[in-house]
Amino acid sequence: MRARVVAFPIKGRNWCFSRSRDPVSVGATSERPPPSIKDLWSQITTRGRKPQENAEAVVDFFADKMNRSWSVFEKAPEGTIKNRIHSLGVWLLSRVRPSEIFLKSVSKDVTKLDITYPMSLNPRLVRRRLRHIALRGAAIHRQKFYGSACLLPLTSVFTILPLPNVPFFWMLFRTYSNWRALQGSERLLLLVSDSPDAWHLLKCKEQENDSDKLLPNSSSNAECHSPWALQPSLELERIIDSKDLEQGLDSGTISEICSVFELEKKEIVKYREYQ
Image (cartoon, helix red, strand yellow):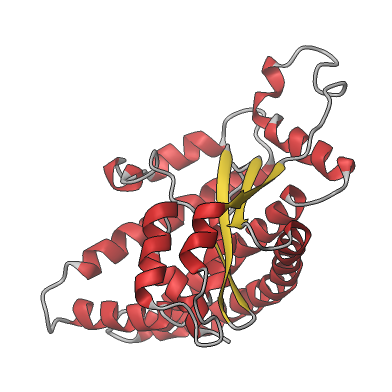
């Protein structure tokens, strides 16, 4: 699958990196029927599946359950316990760094990357920044993943209280979120690599699920090409031109960028606020 990443300076030396929305996937999650334990069991017991695929299936199953439960809390009446828990969750989510949200958006399905940036920027600098955020993200989220996982047993003791175990579910979410960000960091590092070996590894992962459909020697002899494509944008250059980057892009400019390149404004604004 091909994805587009938009990169541009937003305030001082702070850059914004965000993936454009995929119009095909909008509303897809809410329209799917909730998966059952039986569906999960039949999926992980299918012959030929790898342990990593089964682990991802289990993680996705519980992530879907959490998302659906969160939507129930969101619709709770004002003043109820569920509504207050939702307000607390929104406040906690607002403290999540925007780089983590970006890395989570680089899923394992992404095999091609279009990098859009203002025309005046050096393309080598843009790609170097992407590699830096991937390397730094891998180190940070690996550490945070293990830390969050270690805290899960400690927060589980709060289940004896007659209230929802907010600390446990928050640490469960942080464990899942850091794991997804770690996976996204490793995928992004492959996508922006200069090494043909990395491109070949990426192509092998792309063909992993279709290995039965491949002819003998068709995968090993296939020529690998660079998965990334630099796309300097005159439109993006026009929008941010003559803006005072020391003070940061204003709300109107951010709204225009989000409208043109299909980005989430609340995620972009976070880059301006974080130093």
